Length: 65
Image (cartoon, rainbow, N blue to C red; front, side):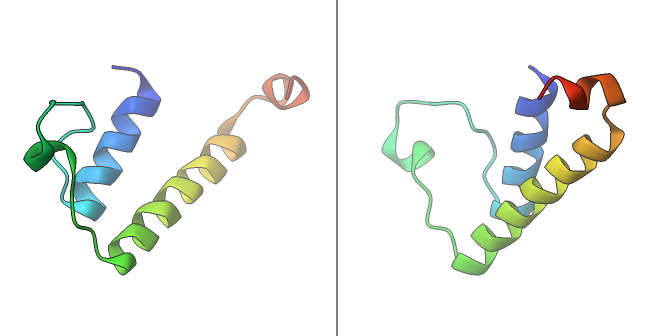
């Protein structure tokens, strides 16, 4: 699992109560009711993780974007 997949899974688990982001081919396992405030928290966590990644990137990495 890539670092990004690990991060997204961790956010889904901590903010949305979703065990995995893997498709399990079952409606009861693949579809979730999520409160809007939980969704907002998850989106904010992902955004902040992106900011942190950008701050920690090497200057040469930033020049290539």
